[in-house]
Image (cartoon, rainbow, N blue to C red; front, side, top):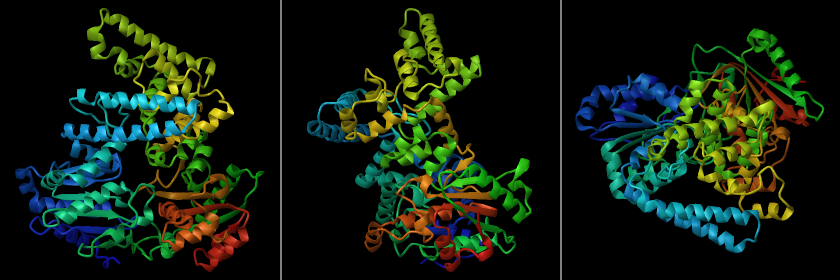
Length: 625
């Protein structure tokens, strides 16, 4: 259990007292939705600066702050006046800063890691049979052997936390996290380097920080508790990524301080009551609204599901009813300003028009986090290089095209220096751009594989290794393989997934990028982390989501738990209901004023009865459509 919640100012003083350099005390701050933890964090940082800032400036030490997004980093930096005694970064940037100087150690780790990967693929090759997957594996083995062979020629490694890393000396996102984790776990010297440079480390959204790295931080704290303060902020009810740290509250040592913020500064009173009820069966943590909070609105709309239903029209009608219920004309019509949240990415992909690209990749478990934050190897190549180039070509912005093409290998400094006729190289790059753009002639919408192969043929851009097996094939990924090849390719699900995704039209990539950039009309629990909206419409639709990871019919009492659910519950494992409850909590808790929950189901009566009996909604808050 957490300690009783002090007022915000008292909380900031409590945290600041834990940052005493003579007697550091690590702590875990429980912070539910809308609790204002960023303000509490910044206040504590400012108090520390007043007391010990000068000493840190003189000694060259820093307070490290790891937060979730670049936007969150910028906000915190702004609030603390960009003071250099604070190093504020995302987890990938922090991990790279920690390891970037240790090129020999990185080389050794990479060599061992590549050796294990090659052995694994070779074992699959021995067990497999001839076919497309066998050819794919051969390309993978060749590519990884080449990379391993050239490790000794690499003097230094590079990494861009916000882009595709495809240079011969580049590390990818997963490798940077893996290397930092391994170094902290296995190298006492790296632990000493960490605590000397960063004797205080704040980790925000700890429940969604890569679990092995969190465990490594906890291990460092155990070994150096008298000189290292680890401050964790989070709420497991808001965990949304599968590789995040589970059971964080149980992992915290008894001697740590465990303050909590229980005031919800975002939501109106009705929404606070609802989200308290939602999480009651999970951990019993509750919040209280601000004293000056409005009452707010929450309505549950039950819609009979069926193939013939026009869901767009239904949801528009519900928005109109919310406008009448709330006397708020921004729910409907020309002034409409409503955030629509789906609870499953399949739904957003279908409604947003990018399902052919998204769904194959989302089915691969270790692709999910990278796909949702846009860092999956191969994604930044399309989102940060190809898409911007195509968009400026379509807008006929010659200067913007020139700026992008300057980064092409065809006109790199080394290429021009070695060329007998640099102008020929520039013309070659210009021809490559023109050739690529012909794919869109006559309003065509080319497939991603067609775009990828066109770029590979001309050498206009460097192609990520992940695509090597696919572009090496003589046939197109769009061609249908025979039954034997399809069966064989199932042994390489990641390549097979990219095979299918790249058959999607290029326009779907643009829609996907808008989605992960939160520029789409549809949002999900990932996209809206930390955000808030006056009017929220949450769409629950098990049939459209078609996933086995979540079930609103089970959460709402319309379906009984399966034998697997019961077994997971008995073994203390996460269940479908646990996951569904968390995501429902996250979406509902974004609401600043009024909330409409739309449930498509064939069990309206069961759901209405269950939710009324459970105290989630009053009779007049449940509306049968």
